[in-house]
Image 1: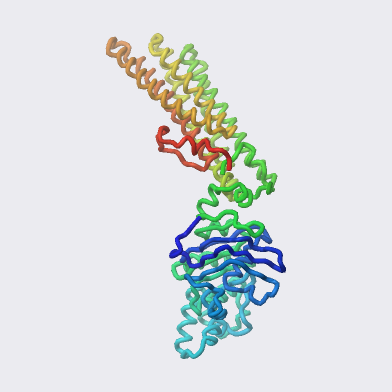
Image 2: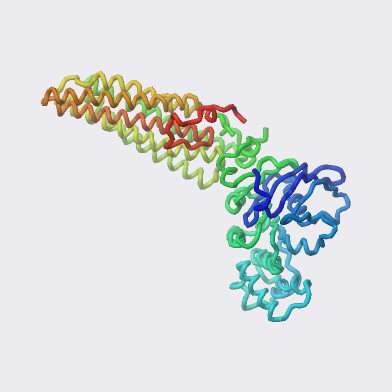
Length: 257
Length: 243
């Protein structure tokens, strides 16, 4: 499936990534559309998390990783030497499987990134914290106890706090690596609903083992296997009549033959 | 991606294989009963056997029960397995097919009720030739549509759909000749109207068999060809080799 370049937020061309010479991603080419949810699915070790982490250069510090091919964010090469990695990671935020709030108050967690960015008035920070917590659908639950420790929140609330912390610096892309796999079903549904409400504001990329979750929240789904992109298409098509037998076997739980 | 009749027995969960297999088995059992109902209803009419006709009317309840049972099973599979892709298409096709089979059962029971009336009024055999002729076509359509479902045979499904066009035109010409009977002899109006209802029911059975054939295409190919003129269908696409 091909998106026009101007509709793509991320444009991945011929991306090959190897760990110590062993290829983990093999010549991937795909475009990720703006203001949509794109899900990466596939068995463990298929490369979906590796691909997600490439999108904000989380492999930079690993000297064993070598890369070929390119990734463009809004038309600009993210590996261009002039690109600041800190700025890239502000624009492309990431949320991990286990919620990882900082050991500080709810308020300070969200304000953290803003303070890093430099001078901002107290009132301005208050406004952004409130906006970010509202955007993450957490405000109503925490507005009376913003000074309480982030650790006092439930797992699901912590995950939404982490999303609020990411949203506070106004990213263009939000990468979600199994964001709900450690959460109970109700908290999971809240995260999924949050993903839906964020869509008009940014581009979301989701890695999940939960096929039904990919089917519920994503607009497009990419199926990866052994570091290759097997099938990429509208989620509706992939889950009703996939083009390839390999995809069908995976999403319907058949023996891989 | 095209699937085959053993596609649904390759899941890692053998219990799931079993559940899907059961759906197909129960649909085929229902199909077998419905086929027999149509055959018995037509025989009852042509042989003037009102006892057989009564049995057909009674048996309709068994057909209805089978539909409810199949619907229940499909609901359970949807709720517990959240099937996707060809599994989802199988469940949807079975639900739809069971509904069409139930309607065929209703038509068979209408034919049987008309047979009872016609036997009682002792009205001769006007229109029997047309009934015999069309019923043979229609029964073959039902049989072939069920076979194509059991074997996931899209070519046979397409043949059923073409047969439906022929039945429709035979039905039209039968109606015209029965109309002539009624104009020639006013006393024949009542029995000939009965025959017309029977032909109408047979024609509807053909339409339901046609629907079954369409579900086979949907099931195997993922193409929804309802409300498409058979002449407009891209035969190459439907008969394309497996990818």
